[in-house]
Length: 316
Ligand SMILES: [Fe+2]
Image (cartoon, rainbow, N blue to C red; front, side, top):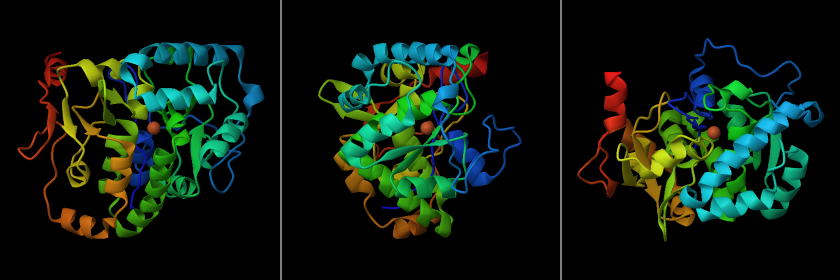
């Protein structure tokens, strides 16, 4: 498979990306004039640092527990059962997790480990880590006043949102394949197509379960506002996953998504993407893109959204 960037997590109410969409926007375009928040001074060549677990304060751990408990209460209703199962096996509810301890569990389950990073890192380095089954997790945690709004991904988004499904064997393979695909897409200059795949699956994906639609995307599951919104709101479209459709669809980084794509299973996602993306990129290069709210006649539509959230925002 061919894959590539890191998507975002919109956090809280109309928040900006708390996820790695920012990572992507930053790293892939190289155009950010924002000061990144982390301490990059002690970084190694592969952009990793020591987590510095002993340096977390009581306030940090308390904030983690507050965020963890708030999201955990939403999970039974909204999250994919696979996510909940994996999260419980990480036993990470007591405070900011020690990455070494979590890595031991993760490595035993799927061969993945977690590495600490100061924040957003260049996408090439990000892909290299994924391809080696290492997931970069930001080491700092937001401030108490940033419970619902954060511009960069912090440890809560990266760990709570992303790490659990790395315990799932199929999803774990998908993520590694994505990293390898990213390395290739960089060479081919097709990062944008690949970034959309990450965005609409890893960050904002829904899955059709026995009890209806559930969330597996990290950007949603680390956000108290978007978690119920993604499942219950009349506003967004919910459309069956189709690889090329997704790769052609632009997305928003400044608000909740206007369209969510729905996979049938992680196996379907892995199989659909375990192909040579080279010819797909060539074909897509000559085709128009779709807007973030567009519904096509060829779509498998679960919900044709009203887009009332966007209209409401526009009226404000
Ligand atoms: Fe993310």
